[in-house]
Image (cartoon, rainbow, N blue to C red; front, side, top):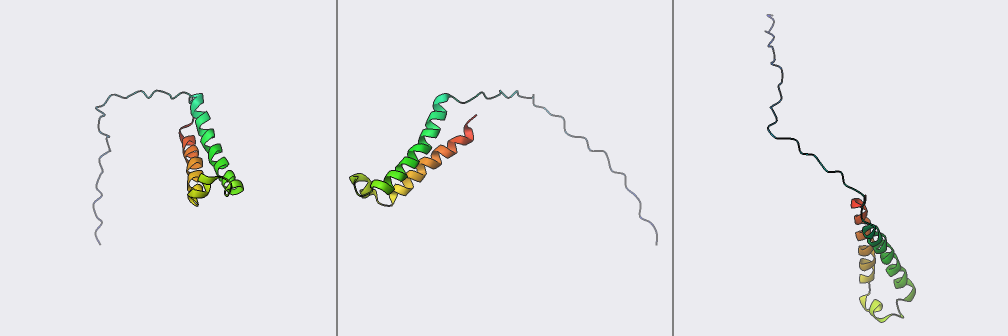
Length: 88
């Protein structure tokens, strides 16, 4: 059986970059108020849930909310947790 011919591949040449490189500015540390709000939201959500369990029958507006108290408490904690992703 005859051998097949070997083809030579051309060397890959990357396209010339036409854009000038942009310098990225280094991000500094977060503002202290950001950290305070972040931890405050997490703590406020925790306090909301604890108060819901302890004094649900004694506080009128909390007992009116019913199971929405869980959504409020967890939403506060999760919003503080999501803020940690941008904390430097």
